[in-house]
Length: 310
Image (cartoon, rainbow, N blue to C red; front, top):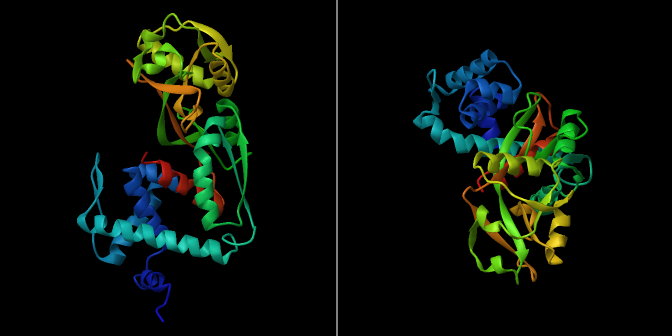
């Protein structure tokens, strides 16, 4: 019978550590030794020593370096997917050995903006639960600002948000772009259009979220740069409330696509808006230097793998 861990024994024979391989992948993913060192929470000289040690152990150069350029060599490019698979298999084995893949031994706690918690997370949670059915989830559906504070205070391991990229105490990893669209009843005159310009909305009662909302801030900033002014007739606190008003025929609403029905709705239609296209960036928010539990780290990586290319 073949040994399941033969790859690990090979790694040990070349006198390299798993952290060396993780450093190699991080440098390529970040495109920078400086950013990779921050990602791994080690000093840049320590990171460079790990890469050089790995190259000595393998007897070849893996990364081409210059003051402006970091890229894998031909050998490094070939090694990259093999190393990624090695680490995935090893971490999955550790989780299983520790009981994390079977009976309950831990919990993942995250803070998510409500729209992402409703439409964005369930698919990834389902995939994760199939692999690690013993892990429980505690999901705090908070406003964008409340979610950032929960991450910053350490109340959750990480967050799903669309703000925080400019905060020095937090790290933001983009996942996908969520465009603002028009929501209206299917019997509304605008519902026949495949796409609309912002100026086409004039003359209709507009429903929007209040000025205290981070979604409103994203929208106002983008439209302000494009010199587009909207005349809001209704203002609500929650995006779901605006859809209720739309369904009742009280007006039309502008809101992120993730906040609209994700399947065919019998009453509400969504229409693309252009000139300009306005979007918010959904991403993972973490505290700098914070160490995630093995389960949370695996879930975070699954989020990136599932949604980072969309």
